[in-house]
Image 1 (cartoon, helix red, strand yellow):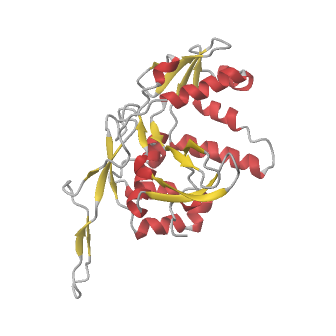
Image 2 (cartoon, one colour):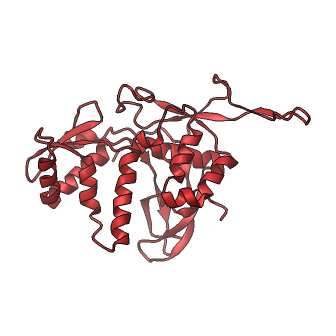
Image 3 (tube, helix red, strand yellow):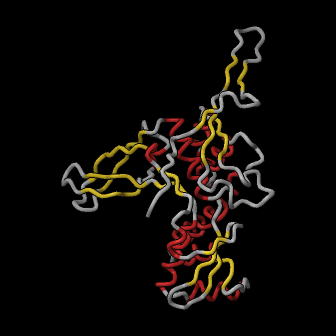
Length: 287
């Protein structure tokens, strides 16, 4: 799959942006402290193309972020927020300069770009994590460079002849059933809902239904029929070939961050391109 060569690390500083973000010490009896809080403009994989007209990011190709501070570290370590599963959302909302933007309405690929930027500015672009070799099974520490991530803007969608409706929805024809399926790009709300349903099923020790749950979030209409009955029937009866095609269609259509990097096992010298594993130490490199 081809990839746009723009790098995630190629960001424009916003030191001269207006208004300036200033922290001050209001204690008039002591030494005054005043400095500009660094901000940066981060490229959005979507380029703002798939947001509704009333969304603050509609037509915007980048977003201004404040660099992470100790306040955001407090949020990431809040046990209450972690248990509720909203710590990362709170951090994203905290660093976004435009407070009209709801983190849950961000497209998944744009959220990923912001998360990578937060981590890179907070702790650097070098990311060391445990990687298990798929060949010999040995686990070793391996270092990746987050600046090597590429921005993918959906330029491979033509491979499956996807129809872009330019409103965040696409149509693809399934190979086995020949159904025309209109699907949509997912946002933060959808990702949270999907993760919650899987977690609830796990706690009940029942079937997780992760594939059908994903399809339920994606599907908009079947042969232009957007009724719940039509969508539910397809979700529960879709042949595996068509299900796989639809998931691939989504992957090709959705702008995102490509974290595929080269890996070579230090034990057996096996090598391959692999997706950078984002473990628990992603935001805590020193732990």
